[in-house]
Length: 634
Image 1: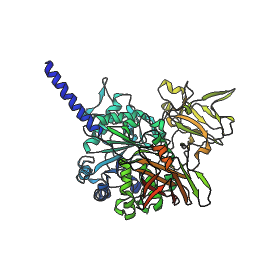
Image 2: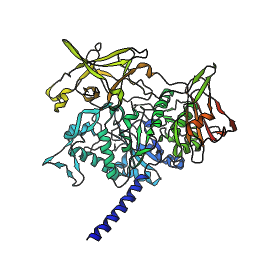
Image 3: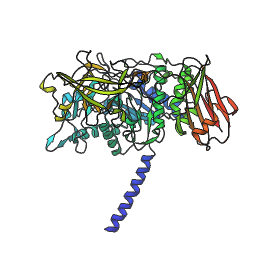
Image 4: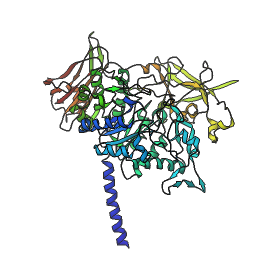
């Protein structure tokens, strides 16, 4: 018996090692593909999707673009009255799980799923992906549908009782920008796990290879659910890529405990085809590169900070009930700059335009061989701070900009409230300021740029409850409060916006009518942290001057497998700029392994020009909102 057990143990260990090796090979490179959102919003149908998938397979798959993703609300009926946050138009099965709109996806009638479409996509050599919202639908909770136990095929029973949707839906944690659509699931109980397990097992049965889970990150931070989903995906026999979004207010500390559980995670708000959106990515991306988060350990492989989709080609507008109807608003230079930053930062490359209108110039940007090589195989990717820029007025500017995060203005002049991980030192220092005969205030001492200390305060009030039904049962909820500004009548501070925000929008913590919702509830702990009940993130206060736009000269650097140095200059200004870097500064950053002499042979990637041997410095005139990319051997 002992010999048998030893032999079995050795076989099990070998099997585990093989499985582990297979897992480690998953998502070793930043994913590439196509997503329907930028071109169809939520209105894509089976025919348009498969047409795009076919072109993806023919033209972009040879360049690594392999994921074809149906974005959000594929379960919503496309009829009058249906829109992003409408209620009552979703298809849900007897277990509370969404299934495709049969009018838009007629092949789904065979299994109330996507298996037919997934099979066609797989036959093309592609991988099939879908967008999901976090948690459970409001419709399912209101209908109190039973929860499927996938082991028995019957309703889930625990502790002698049958559990249903109303038991697991956290009605005080609805999605901030889709409150009538979805809410978080209670993952502290077995029934919550059972529901999510039945959901993701069903997606695996459909043949799904990629899931993009929304309203679960940034200011909508739901770490318990992210980790639960990750663990459930690990249970499956087949790997599924896990992408999470949106990325509003994401900082490095916020991603620290999440990146290892996912493969892609958005670090900005939605990116659309305007330069303000593109330019906001430079600073936050630099911070993630400096923190070594690019290609860090992730779910069954690696994880990648995600700069969102590439909105090139033929597009729609955000949040509309309309398909593609207009060309991209970015100039050719701006598109090249965006593709360059995404590649240098090793972001996933997910094309957003309607592939049926793919033009030659867009195709050339998306398939530039050197940029794609950088995106997959480069190392030492980081912002290069040692550049100077000279505008047409001959005014010298430094290109070294300290990494900063966007912040959130409130009604207080010159001060802003933002959100961060509660482990961040900037989250400390909040206190109660009592007032005789008046409501207490929650305050924080704030140091201004001129060295003066001033106090930032918001009024602390208990929520007004409309009825007994609104009272939350947990005893600790009695410690929660609203925060209000004196000159705003019946308005309370929201921790997350009530609509999706684009990357360039001023990140404004919203004031709205006071109600008993976790989005508006705050707690002050013993450490001096002001904690959001919705996201469990903590509030900070900074100068409103930090919210200014990003301009000037920026640069990124990376290295290749054969000793190449890739150096990209970006001009974020609306006038031409001459940008310069010294070879000695390349050595300062990369060391003598890559810089062995004070001259470099050089070619420019986008133009293909061979610039010969450069002595001591590298310089180029860069168009407004444009870039140049050098491939160097030094």
